[in-house]
Image (cartoon, rainbow, N blue to C red; front, side, top):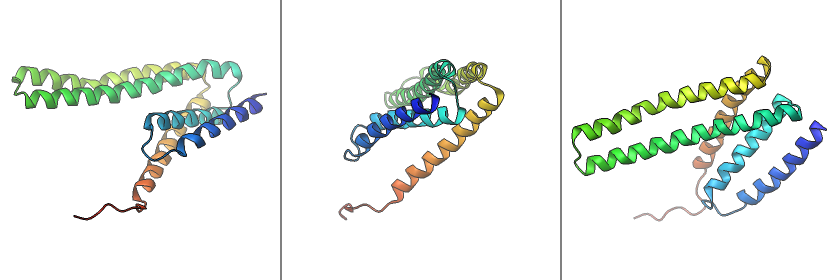
Length: 163
């Protein structure tokens, strides 16, 4: 039952992924990010070989981990934009220092929450499964970076005109 359910999910995700990546480049990048997350989750579930009960407990925690990371990057950009604006507006040192401090505290807050979420996930997994999760995250991130790098290194079909 576990394998057939995962196979059905995989087929559905591949159909969705195929339609999203068949679009023109640059179209709806948020949707492509969602598909990558869904693919990553599916691959992770296969590696962890979870029962249906375990999957139901683990999936919400994985979503929380993703949301925490997304929130961190969003807030980081938001604070940097505020700092840039404050500099352009010639804000006083105290205001800029306050924004700098908020930005500097962000990684600590992110790591604290991530540690709590990892512990929550760990409570639903065996030690071996949790170790597989950690290793999978590193490998998946590295593969994704390599693929993105390869895409950016490909020559353009239509080079930009020279000036």
